[in-house]
Structure formats: C-alpha cells, structure tokens
Length: 93
Image 1: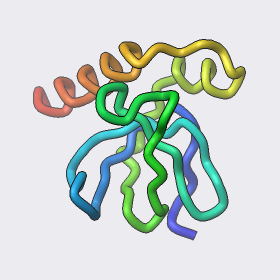
Image 2 (image 1 turned 180 degrees about the vertical axis):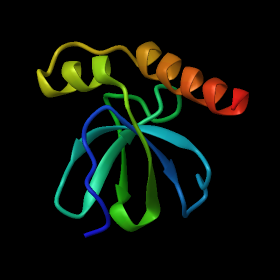
Image 3 (image 1 turned 30 degrees about the vertical axis):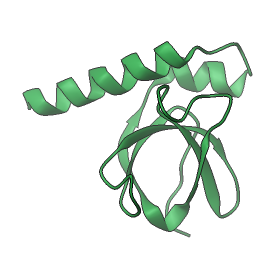
C-alpha cells in the first residue's frame, strides 16, 4: 500500500508529464485515484492516476471532502480555488 488517501485531499503528481502538478482526490479505488484540478482535468472527467505516482501533501480540504463524500454538487471553480489557496499558503511559508 502506498498510503491512505481520502476524497478532498490535495496530492502532487510525482511521475508523468504532469509531474509537480497539484490535484484534489475525488475518488479512491483499490490501486488508483481519480484526481481533478478544476481546469484541464475537470470533475466530470477526472484523471486516473496510479497510487505509486502521487504523493500526499497531508492537507485535506474539509468542505470539499464533505461535498465529495455526500455526493453534493461541486464546481470546478471550487477545486481551482482550493488548489490555488494551498499553493499560495505553501509559497508564503
């Protein structure tokens, strides 16, 4: 097992052409994750990524997590804002 992930968690890609890109976990499967960034990989067509090729940032966006688990309507803009805020916070540190 390569780690425990949960919906709403921010992860970073460690392999592939999208290496270094941040995503939100939308769904967890046994050996892969479905990821969205709200722009190129939207919620209606998430990216499928192997667990070995992502790294957790340790940050779970609680509001997005609740919406994803309860299958409430979530907007791509919400995902983009959450990722942007996380990146800005990390750059400030």
